[in-house]
Amino acid sequence: MMCSAWSFPASALASKTGRNGCSCEMPSSRYLHHMSSTDESMTNQSASMEWRVRYAECDPMGVAHHTAYPVWFEMGRTELLRTQGGSYAELERMGALLVVVRLNVRYRSPARYDDMLRLETSLTHCGQVKIEHSYRLWRGHELLTTAETTLACVDRQGRPQQVPEMIRDTSTAS
Image: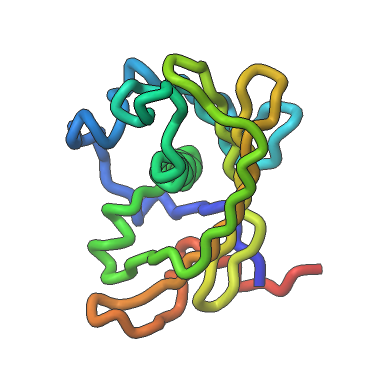
């Protein structure tokens, strides 16, 4: 089964406004620039976003700490879901929680304080219980990092459950 690019029926969507989270965790929207998922280099199952590396994400040498990258990947997944008209808040209201069960990162070159970064997030597979994404992090034309994650859909007790129908394509891949 392949995901339908996080497509949601209009009846399942609620009007959402962004929440102001902890400023040390997530950049405000003024620091983010979202690219259309119809960009020639992207499929309809991909999204891209840009931001600057913040001081709080760096070590004393001005290098982005390795723990910042999984946060950035989560930002990419969240924005991919939003570009398709959905939200994690809606999934949680349905009792579906997505947890990271696998993270594979290849650091090729370091990101540094105040670098302008572009993260490309792609949905690569959606099964009955698991969803897979891939990531490419760029500084200009330089590829800094590649990564993959696998998410499992669980209920509030942590038991595996099916990915909600609203994000799962029920037809078999051809």
